Length: 134
Image (cartoon, rainbow, N blue to C red; front, side, top):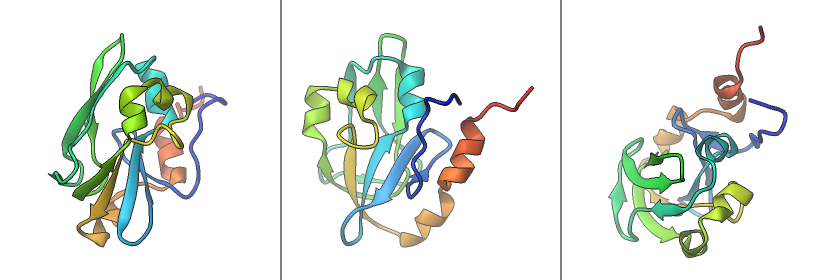
């Protein structure tokens, strides 16, 4: 991790570099981290789950494409997809510019609140993406 990488407090993270935060009553917003978007490079295409689709925690639910690679997208929490970010679908570069804001990917109505306990805190995620000092 470099000084330019951003890992906001108050979000929950996965080993696969997705983030999530509670949104409203029983819902959560999902996106990819700043670290992930930097590894990908310029995001050029998104494949996201459909509204109404049920997803299981940590399961593949889509793909993110850049000139470098196509990467699988995994959901940090299980539940029913209630919204996708149409703006990011039309303008995937939003993920590079604002991964924690306008570049969010989808919103879920949560299934099992206990799943939050299986996610990392910002501190744990920083430790995951920070290389050891030499």
